Image 1: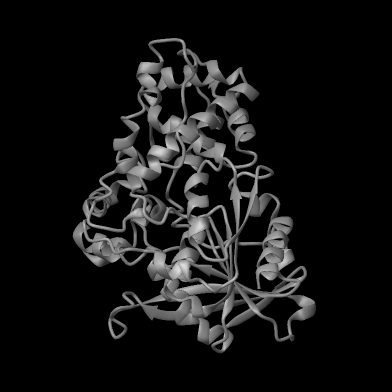
Image 2 (image 1 turned 90 degrees about the vertical axis):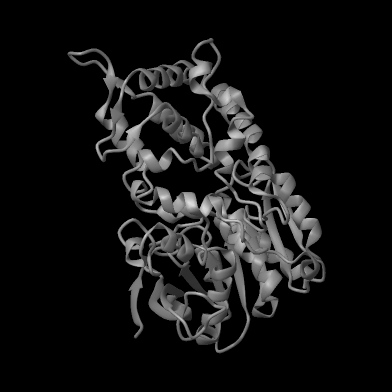
Length: 433
């Protein structure tokens, strides 16, 4: 059953689909997918081409837009848009500490989660496409991890695509997770240096907070164990266009005087727990490194292991001197499964995923080299989340792909400059076509 309703300027329709958990076993267990169809009110009765949006992540449901903000307004000028909650997210059979025990113990949960990578998401798209478009191909817009899915789409089912648009999400085709993080830590260090250049007063503020956390046991209101490493992970903000400013405003109200001396303020702790908690997107932490698995090598908590190669990120060592504390970025660590109440019950499951040695390749270089689908990608010149050099190498490997390399936006450019970003990519694929 579909249900339609209205918001300013748009008609929305809730759509649900049943697909196999394992597309290699179509007669086996099934899961439910949810997607929201969006069409401009004045075009609701028109026969429009379709654009399916693949959200970044992994582990995030599709945007819950109100009206026609960001890139959506531009897309609705000529498309019906399908905002897909990728499997395990939003309303699409969510995977979290409450639902995963229904699968059994950690081994069963880990085996289940192997079906939540880009390859399964793309096969979901192909399974529902005939039911949405009547069999016609559609355009895909992939943001960040959604771009990883888009490259898998080009590798496995290009016949389903009219065009492919990627924003901040061209993955390395061959890199192991270790290669990804060896490239990431120096980028993160540059972003932190730029932040301190902008807000030099934050050097001492960050050191003071880290020192407090090394000296005191701090539990956030939701029970999160707030450590110096957890504090450093707030550097994930620095990959967004307004992230440096958000981090600065967060740090400036960290402490308040109390009868027992300075303490971390309730306001600071409340904001921090919202930034650190994975309660709303646990799948991100569970499969984040698995999205890079493509061979018999385990990911084996890659970000944690590779971090040891960059001792300047060690908070305790930093505080023995007078240098600035380095924040970290988009990395997942085993300690998160100890600190975060939303992840603690899933620690063993995460460990089993990290130890797996049977990952299948996600990309087909030969097929990408023979690509015939018009493709355009926005590549952000110093993207903190996705390595620019890796992205450009992949761009060269996909026949006909046209890039727009820009320093106008950070990784969230499709949100910050949505209409212009989408307009530029559409013009590139049409020139190519």
